[in-house]
Length: 432
Image (cartoon, rainbow, N blue to C red; front, top):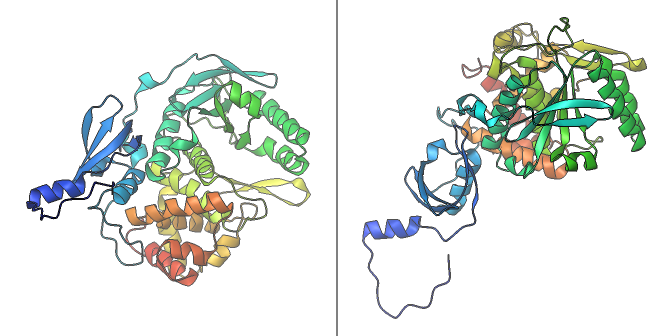
């Protein structure tokens, strides 16, 4: 509360309406970014709350009345902290009702007018890429590769992350993220060689050798751009490379040639990389749980947003040989197949086993379990709020917390209680 001069020794009487207005009118707060379900953003300060209506004042001094139901989870957390009428909700194993988790990626209103084509060129090594700009991305394309579907998908997935994770938008600040769509025969190969040279020059010889062996058989990769190149072009250092088909390209299982915005592999790749950006990276010595959390999330978004999956996991085997493994054939049937295998005793899920798994040895059952665990962790609004706290914990500790710690984030007693809640949810009608 703001400090006020002392009152004279007399009683003050408030009507009920006056008292309610006083309690719901807030001290002046700093402007912040507010995000709505339909994709709109605004810098404004919180003035007051009144039931389901939130009053905001923008930079021009205009007062806007916005329904709480249209605001992001981060906005609601902010209101819960500064709005006296708000109460925190429980995240425990008690039924959380049937409150529906919003789907901001699908519900945002995307405007093609927000995309600027022919926005110059960017050179990566000896390669030149055409630039297409969106509000938060620069899509770098080889000649003949269409950037438009990826531009819209990236903005939709950005909105999805920003809606559920309050700190995600701030990671971009005044920079954009590069998504590089490289044609498969020449540009993708040369780009890999260029990045291997950068890693070697920085003394990262082991990651360079690993990347060199994986790159020819991979369809995408996350890379870090040199700081000076990123700064000159207004980019984050984190970038995504996707092996993409241009006009007249020959079909290949390694090349992303899907048409339309909701391309499964692109959705998987970008959703996974965005979550990694939100979590801030993990230590190379802290691999426990990375597969369960990050790979599970990528498959979760791929299947739930596109209805299918085409993504295989690249295995790095002894002798630097590589192979790939996928999940169950039909993306829409992963819940049904997982339930069937558990109920028939063909599969005995264990969170301890799942957290010890890695992409290097993952089998179809492992992918399905990671997918189901990610969906469980984000299956209700309350659990989604806990999931955001989990990502913040990872960003500060640079490792996935142990199962007991994750359970406590979800207001459960310990790891076995978390496993019990997960398996009960998998067996329910909510997982389908």
